Amino acid sequence: MREYFIIYIICCFLYSVYNWKILSHSEGWGIVYMVGLITIGFIGLGIDFIFRLIIKNKKTLNILGILIVLIFSIILYDELN
Image (cartoon, rainbow, N blue to C red; front, top):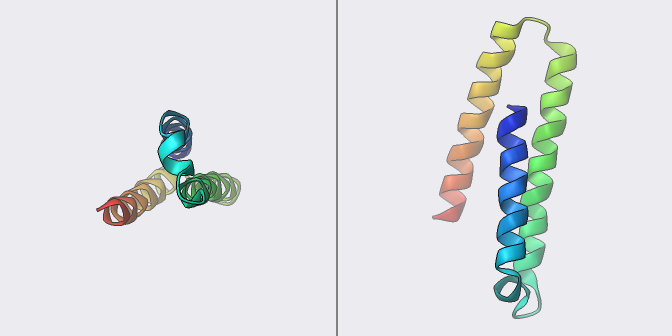
């Protein structure tokens, strides 16, 4: 789960750098939106950290991680379409 959110944050950051002119156009609301998306990625990393402290069973942790990544991916896909 950690790797997924790290890749997500890096992709958001690279997208923001690559499309800076488009995002900053029209009062910069695109930048605000990207900061919000990156913040969601950091929240995901925080959730992963808390789960790693609480759940010691690796099988349960992996199943929970797969479910969270799947739900996050569906929400993100729905948001982008």
